[in-house]
Amino acid sequence: MRRQQRDNFKRMYTLILMTIGCSGLAIIIFTLVIFYSAMDANRRLTIAYQPVSNKPASEEAFIKYGEELVNHTSRYLGPNGEIKSVSNGMNCTNCHLDGGRKMFGINYAGVAANYPKYRNRSGTVVTIKERINECFQRSLNGTGLDSNDYELKAMAAYIISIGKGVSRKTTPYGTGLKSLPFLSRLANSEKGENVYRDQCAQCHGSNGEGKRDGSGMEWKYPPLYGDHSYNIGAGLYRLSRFASFVKYNMPYGVTYENPVLTDEEAWDVAAFINSMPRPSKDISNDWPDISKKPIDYPFGPYADNLTDEQHKFGPWLISLSY
Image 1 (cartoon, rainbow, N blue to C red):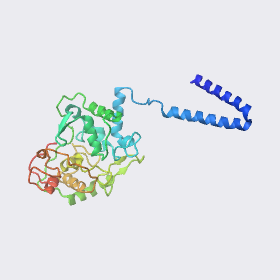
Image 2 (cartoon, rainbow, N blue to C red):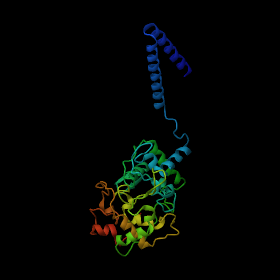
Image 3 (cartoon, one colour):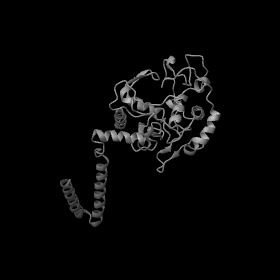
Image 4 (tube, rainbow, N blue to C red):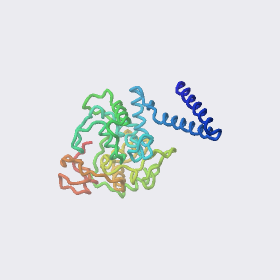
């Protein structure tokens, strides 16, 4: 660097001498302005294109970066993301509570032990990275990351770390969601609206719009319906999954051991929320084998004679597999 600076000053000195011999002081001043402008431009160019050196160097830091992405997805990958824009502004942890560590809060503990995994929804074997991108495309209503993106690899590393030590093809207690007994009646969205006003609106807004945190970059309480919420292809659009989620996790602070809502309230508020407008998605390729569709999947064609309404709101006479 010092040698380059000396060479630069030598060139400047030569230019000045040549200029003196030609046109005097005015041209000297002009030459100096041009020279320093070029040096400044070169300096900016060097800064702009210098190699990135702030990537985590150790496995521990790599996993920590993945955790940061799960907890603050919007900051890095949202509409105004620092890395790129591939999602709707929600964070992974808005659904995978406590960064995927909360018992029955769509917990990640069984992921590493069970992926790659054949999924009936796609009719293919899905890797952990592909499963993450499914969430980006559905729950975060976005486009997903490239398979070789550093951020996708870091998120996968973090999720794998949570299930470290879990035996292959086993599912630890507390993984995913806790099953909720079926109702013997139709889930009632009108009753669910009353539950929403009493139990949910204070945090999620009177119109399901959510509330942002102090930075304005992330949702403190995510939108439950409307343009910024999950789309119709998300897992939580299935009534059984949303009812289970709210029963054992909501209102905020609730755990599966001390639920606040009754079973009926959980089913009804799920019916209300999933009856409200939200983004669409092309789901025409989902569930290629229609006999594998869950009973509460609300889009035909079906392998049974139940109506669309019954598939969405029940009642159902068979058990669901989560």
